[in-house]
Image (tube, rainbow, N blue to C red; front, top):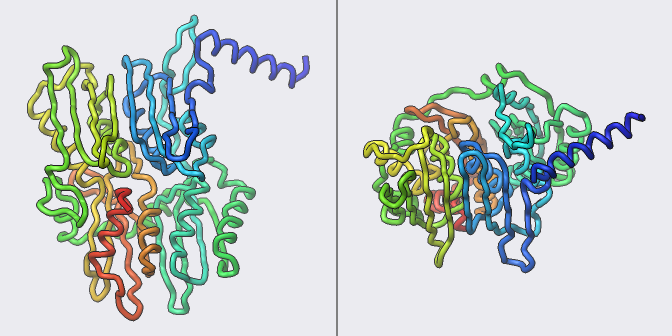
Length: 432
């Protein structure tokens, strides 16, 4: 039997095994595209369960720029069935989205005809980090155009250092990882260079990509120092007295918990205004608290008001009866929905600096598209960026991803400071 024929027989046998189990690989994630523009598409996920799966799925959906308008989650702790109704755009890459969603679902195997979750014996290997050195003649909106290309190519920006020279050139240093794990190949490097060339034209001077070790990545972090005034105001875990213009108030978010309606679960009911990544913010908070959702329903009503019902249990499979644990989870959920990100404009000597921060998941993953939204807001305001840095800082007992953008004031800041802060906040929240 030829090698090719043996491979074909093996694949057929593998498919027959999965069919006998009632699990087709293509059936793990099914995407039903909307028939009419403006109607939601439906994503159905049927796979083994794991704590934090909802968070991981919502992060991917957020990365692809989709808005979840309705959701249903059901699980027995071993197997889950999830349905998301999402609004996409003509540019949504549905086939790639399906591939990424399937990739994050726990894998299945057969043993005596029984499906089970094959847990990883070892934690996954950290992705390789690459340094992208990009030099180009400066123009307004350039940083966003470069960031958009990297996002389209599924290159995750871990850290960045952007600087402008007196002769109107920019030197961008991006520390990136590749979702496709191909950046070590010349073909992939050429693809990145070609895409950047297409968006910058003759203004591009050079583009170099090289793999770097962890010691280089650590050194690129720079000083972990943040002024105490900034840390006190931005990272206070108490409910704030004031929030950025156009944001929510404490009355805008209601979180209640009830142990009387279910013998085995705590019911969490949330009523709030929708924002970009709302379901992700709920799921990442529950994941960090090691909370499991047995059943959940999410829907958006009139005027973007959301109602979420979640029947949850702790890691031990029991409901939350300790009042202190209830209060801690309730307060954290309310705070994360009021302030999923922190935005502030501060003075840096004679200059003006924008700071944006978001909490990092305990798994080490940050929020998608934050730098994309920041640079898009600056492009829309026709405001330049003189320098930018991304770094991670441990403040209190939480790790934060902090974006520091030094505004190019040129002959003077033409856009008021509060307008910049408001525009960035609205862009991050999806209210623009």
